[in-house]
Image (cartoon, rainbow, N blue to C red; front, side, top):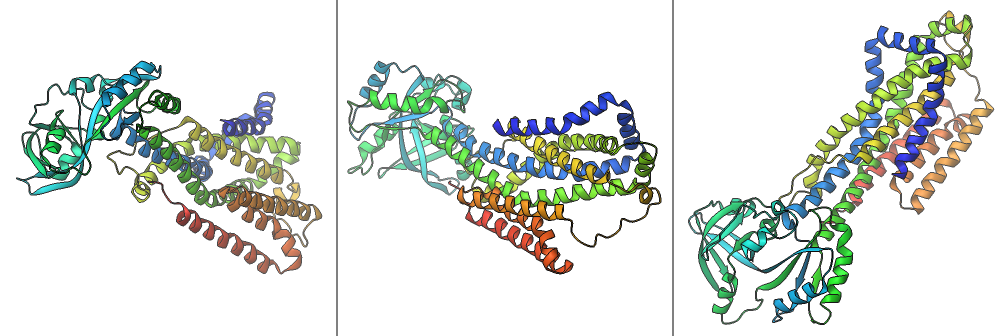
Length: 517
């Protein structure tokens, strides 16, 4: 929110003089509205060019939000109400663990569910298909429906009874086996097998995602008892649900884990884990990493958009050069002419910021859908939810607006310095024989600022500052180079440096980012 506040403050600072001028001098607003109405095609062109940067910036944040939402969606599909798991050591009594947790009376806990889990092979004999390693769980179905704050997130809210020879499979497992309700599955575990009838095929959500298949209590233990030697017996687990829904229990997780470990301290070998918190943390890290990657790649497009924006406003001024010269001739001061042009351009900028944010949402979502499989998103049955974070939209829109307003002010100040006679006669500006001292000073300052930004980005591991620092320094050094080298050589050296650096930054950003899946 700090970034949003800073950008909003900058936008207000840049818009405030124009708002004051618009209130005090209504004729400037009337002139801006008249020009927009007289040249609708030109207005559309300017808005389209101005929204480019906003759309790119916004899409970078949307990509991160959508990918983060996709990874976080695993919390819904694989865990649902399951926030923490307690796994006793082999041979330990799960009832003792449950009693210790209940005696601790931890406020954050709103549900406990005893379960047994194992890895087994599921075979569909009639389909000639099998899943070699399937997660199979068993628990009391009635207790599972009341587990957690909302029965809908359990995935088994509509199930009532599971027969001892029945099995519930989720849609992913059913799809891999090609089975449906009423078909027979053969469960292989502990050198034994049993034929079970598929009673339901349910969505891969909550407890139905925690295990690829659900069997009646005692099924796994019965198979283990038939085996002569059991290398890894079924794992008893106590599933814990915290207050809240699927995604809003993260803040309670760490304290609850500490309390549960303290409660089970007298029971050696109890393993306390918070798998959902780990999924949500990884999702946030993945989203932030992708936001940085796409922001770094898009920063060069934003630079191109800024140059396009400058060209558009300069083109706008050149087309009205005679009109602007006449306004100066009839008494418009430079300050008033600057305000008149800037008010019209600010209307374009605000429209472009709003439209660019909307376009950025679509671009970001499409990029996330295309790039998501590359980074391992949505590989656990989750999808690509269109996550729209207000902060991301605010940052994208305000950044685009600030860039446009800074460009508008710079262009307006340049336009106000036009020569009245040359403007009225539409004569070209004379070529400057030498670079002015002020330009050299500003170029030197820009070079130092760019070098400092790049160095700070290198030390602080900030990819955006590092990538943008060198182009800023190169462009700022152009006036200095023109004093030492021929014009053509100086321009080629500057452009070549920026292009080479941009290509290297883009390549390194993509190849060095490794998803933690």
